[in-house]
Each structure stands twice: as structure tokens, then as C-alpha cells.
Amino acid sequence: MRTAEEIERTKESLKDALFALMKKKEYPSITMSEIAQKAGYGRATLYRHFQSKEDIIKFYFEKNNAIFQDLKSITIRSKDDFYEVIFRVFSALKDNKEIVKLLISAHLEFMYLDFMNTALVRNFEQNGYTVSRYSPYYFMGSLFNVSMQWVQNDCEESVKQITDFYYDHLFNVKLMP
Image (cartoon, rainbow, N blue to C red; front, top):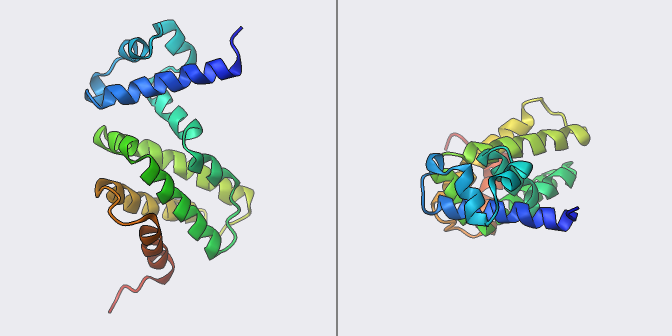
């Protein structure tokens, strides 16, 4: 019987294989067999852990990026808590910008948005933060759009600069001069 550590290593190898292939090929043309072969496993091993390429990407979000786990545990009760969430999101995106760019080029950035929406809705529900049922979607939608543009611009601004910009616009927006 395989240990949890061995299973985790196998999943990591399969994830790495998918992203390596995405650097060379268009996402739709990558097959599950190619992923298994690139990782050095058989198809049965791949399918034991993942049913689709999208499942591999979901694994990336769930396991390989601390921000996604952190968002589940942050209690959002003030503007300062929002700032912390925003900063962590931008930090994680910068640390993982090459993979995020692969997802953008494959038109899979919606998977990031879906994952973040789910995490934030759960956080709002768990912490009783209910300005409106639309609040987490408003917050994530705007953060998603700004962050995707920032990544496409190769994260030119520092994490602090982009966080400050976003935070100021979220809480202090002036629509008319």
C-alpha cells in the first residue's frame, strides 16, 4: 500500500507534467496519455488520481498554492483583513505567474475565479460576513479582473503597489472628478 506522501508525490509529478506540456502545446491537444507518459506513469495511475486535465488544475489550486488554503482560514471582519487577503492573493499570483500565464493562454483562468469564489463565499458564510449575498462575488470579480491584467502585464508593479491600488479603489473609489 502506498503512503500518503507517495500519493502526493505522484499527483505533484502529474501536475508538473501537465504544466510542462502546456508550455509546448495547446491545452486542448494535450491528452491524458501524454500527461501520464511525461510524468513517467501509466494511464491507470493517472486515472486513479485524476479523471481530467481540469482535475489536475484543481489539485494545483487546492494543494500547491498557500493563498488558496489561507483564504479559507482568514476571518474577514475589517478593511485591514481585506487588505491582507488582497496582498496574499497578489503575492501568490506573482509567485506563480508563469503557471497563471499558462492558464490564461489556455483560456482556463475561469478555473481560478471559480476556486476563489468558492473559497471566499465559504469564508464569508463561516464568519458571518453578510453585507449581501453578492458581496464575495463583487470582491472576487473585481480582484480577478485586476489580477489577471496585472499578471498579463508581467507583474510590473510591486505586490504592495498593486495591493494599495486595488484596496484604494475598492474602498475609496471616486467616479467623478
